[in-house]
Amino acid sequence: MKMVYQVAVWSVVLMSVPMAVLAQSPTEAQVAEAQQFYQDGVEEIEDGDYPEAIEELTNAITADPTYAPAYTYRGVAHTTLGNEDEGLADLNQAIQLDPNATVAYFIVALFITTLSSCSKHWQILIGQSPLTQSMAQPICTEESCKLSWAIAPVPCKI
Image (cartoon, rainbow, N blue to C red; front, side):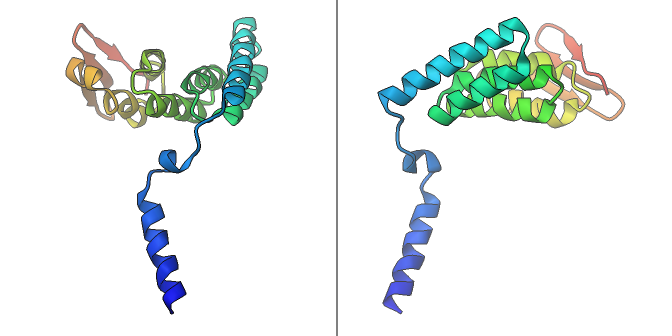
């Protein structure tokens, strides 16, 4: 009975600890490996080989799951291939790992303006950043899907 109680207590304690705290920081070797895979992935994007870029960037993420730039560029590769959900999930992960990842916010904003499912994705950008919260007011309906920015509305395709 005492053992069951201890297991239950530890289960509750561990469930309340964020996974980032439980995860170990990557070693210098893992960071270096991730950066090399990342550079290779960016080169593949520049060459237009998006499937190969995804593979290289996935290797970077495997080497260092906290390396936000790899998620950003894998998101670019996915969205370029039309894999909107995977791409936006990667971009969102980059933002989660680095709330100051301005490149990820910018890319999300670019893709939101062209997504067919604008209303389901604009929250990734608006909901995450205090800066964009102060700059933009989301307006999205079934008939018209727009992000009303401080300067001008940006229409989304439905």
